[in-house]
Image (tube, rainbow, N blue to C red; front, side, top):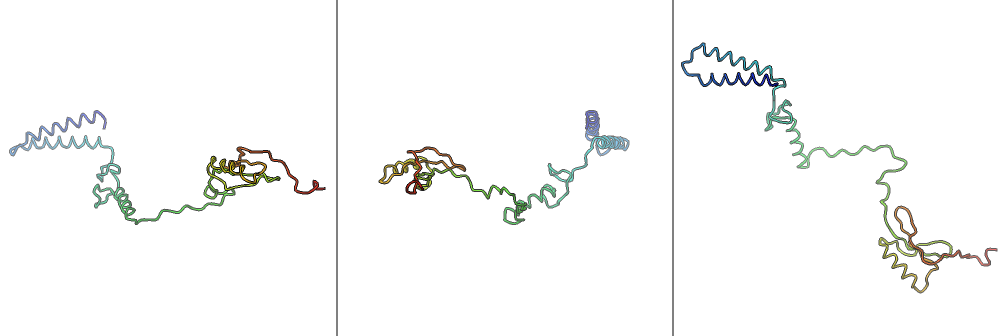
Length: 189
């Protein structure tokens, strides 16, 4: 509704209000025909200014939506949503849809891969290669204390090292010097 329509409609309704205040039991027919003409003029102004469809529900979200007589706001769409929520509240309704399996990836899916773990591996040099000398530890300080105890033990190895394992391996510290030892007598001649 534009400003001119609003002004004209306001004037017509004020005139009707004045007619309403002047009505009595002995109002002449000429005056009633004048009231009737003013009412028609006001209704015509309303017809010109109203552009949208008349509301069918009391719902602010769906004013022209489908009607459900049993709903408090007469809105079928909102009442359907409320009913579905009540069903879900009592455990009824449809079970959640299962994901559709897709073609397997050659790289796998995230759930197939193990989660990265951070561990410290104590290793000793056995003369030819590094070998695990104790249980992998989750705490670095505990692993270093374990290796210190091994070095002070009755039969210490030539060298020890601590390897940090976190998806990949990284040597953190080496104690001693690993020397290649030939196990064959006379140098494998």
